[in-house]
Image (cartoon, rainbow, N blue to C red; front, side, top):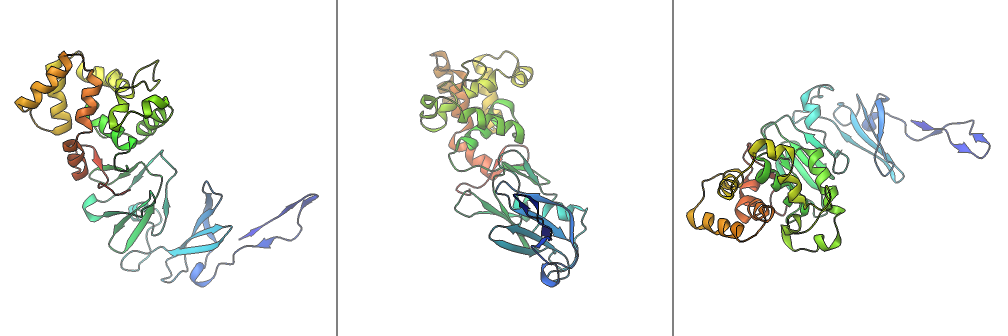
Length: 296
């Protein structure tokens, strides 16, 4: 691999060799195009070479050249076009910040997620581990896990999908709502806990709160239409807590609504309650699933 240096009068006549591929760093030249990340580091692959002869994943940056061997637990090469390569790339830095979900074509029970203490985490299975950063969701074959720091706005917003729409977030939509809330007035963002989503303007569609953006959305209106307070609360019990109302809790929420508390405040109270977060952390396939508390 070489570069041709641009000078003040044109280009250098002799290329500068950056890397020669042989042995542990790869036998073949790089396969396909190189990929550049936001820092300008380059990533690519070779089809052969490496410790097991399976090829390498390499990174070329201003600080040097690094490789990792692409192999499965048995040491055999992976199919470059198959699902194994799709869901396990040892040592890879995964995805562009906050816009996509990372697909993994295996059930979540085969993996563990562990934090690195810097906002990134590892997704590990037998024989390999991926270092993940800037990813909103990890899509396993049985469920999609939303990656969110504990008590973060990303976590709170993801749970609104369960409360208002009875579904897990789609990554582009979640990224959009996070961006909207990040641009909300400072007075809204200063509201403690999750209630900044309901009790202050997010500047959405005029002066709606972020939770108001959910309850006034075409999806919400098509799903529920016009609801009485009793119907609204009953739906929240079913959507968020996956159970029928308990009498005392139901009466308390109805009393709050009848006395002027907004539905958006009640929605956030349900969606981001300790019971809801516990259910989400356990992560049944049909519901919003969050990374383990304290994970990221």
